[in-house]
Image (cartoon, rainbow, N blue to C red; front, top):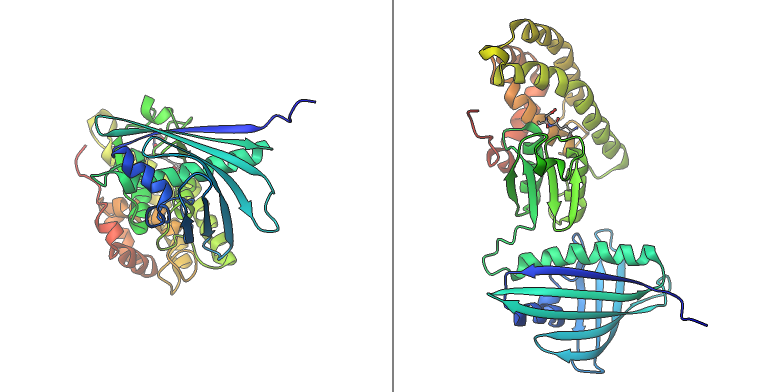
Length: 357
Ligand SMILES: N[C@@H](CCC(=O)N[C@@H](CS)C(=O)NCC(=O)O)C(=O)O
């Protein structure tokens, strides 16, 4: 009888660092504990006995305190070019399967090519979840080993003048995530490569690509450590989602598309007065709803700052730049108090959109 087929994965990365450094990152506790677990997790235990037949063990801890221990033994150790070791999860609820990792490192012009195979998974789902975990860890490895500290595996694609792009930039700043902005216009090939509807923004984190601001911010929330972008309780997390959906569906249209953009991108060289007047008529009722939502609090979704605030603040910043918005907004004191709170945050100040067309 044939051996049952197994699932394997191969990951490739180019890392701007000498291969000794990359090799050591896999086998030295002081390095491995900083990256060899998915983003959002920590590694309280890391022990390595790096010689053929020697064993290693790592314990990863999730934000909720769940712990997962993995270990195995070294089959081949050839610093700095090759290492092979077994990989098996320990503990009652973990699959009792030993898989094999082989790492090959080659270096050219100060850049190490890492080719890693992880083979022997018995089911596709297990293979896929390891792929996600390794990608997340390897992104951290790139950041840690890059001599200039600018591996910037996180790329935000979009125009920094866009309100939604700013919402994501603020979220990344709140989390302390390093990233680069790839300037791209709506419906450009760069954005369409990720976003099938061509809207701004899209995010790339190594091989992971996400579109839609709220999905991007939720990814950032889960993938990176740092202060939370979501309220701590179920009710307020649902309210955050409620407001994100409402802002996208009922606020962005009248306040940004039908008001701000009529000034910013005037058709025929001058703002479309009729369209602006129509949008201005809609604004008091909408601003009153938002004012009521803030009530006595500084945040849209209950007692804590959240993704909903990140989406609204850049919109109101623009509304206030034009005469009718500037005249209307002070009539909504709760809303303005909420805006004053978010405008005081470093993430707001650091992400001022460039002015001019
Ligand atoms: N629901 C989307 C909205 C994104 C959006 O509308 N972005 C604007 C820029 S602020 C855009 O791409 N507009 C171009 C268009 O609508 O064609 C999200 O949350 O990301």
